[in-house]
Image 1 (tube, helix red, strand yellow):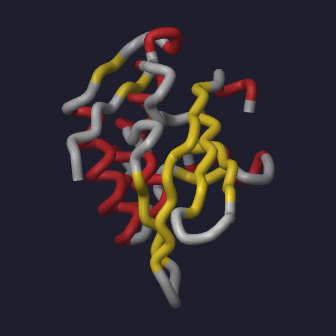
Image 2 (cartoon, rainbow, N blue to C red):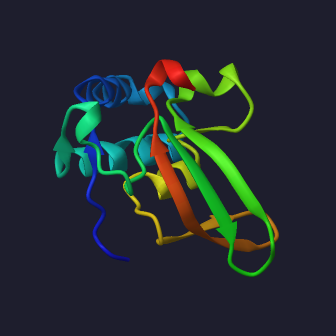
Image 3 (tube, rainbow, N blue to C red):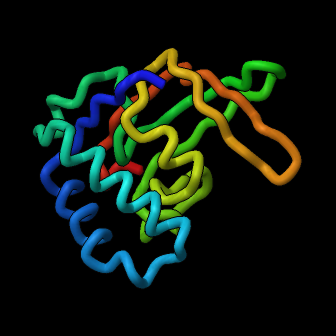
Length: 134
C-alpha cells in the first residue's frame, strides 16, 4: 500500500482529536480505527478547505466507487460518526470502508470485506464539500 497524504481542515482535525479523547466509549474495532486516524492526521497536512487537493478523499467528500469485478457503482459521503443519520449514503470514517477511503486518491483501489467475500473498488472521483452542503 502506498503512503496516504492526509489533508484535513483544522475544524475536522479538532473533531478527530475529540474522538481520540473519548476513545474509550467506542467499540474495540472503532478504537483501533480512531488511533489509526489520529496517527495518520499527525503525519498529514492541516489546510484551509479550499487547499484540499481535488483528487484526495477527506472528511466531507463525495466519493464515487466502481467495483473492479462487476458493474456496481457506489456513491457515498465520508462523514464523522455523528453525521451518519442525517441522510442516505453517508459512511462514517470509523467504519472499515470509511477508514480505508480516508486519505486515498482518485485511481486508488480499496477493499471492502463482508462476511462472505472481499469486494475491490477503484475510486473514480471525489469532491470535497462543505460540511453544511451534504
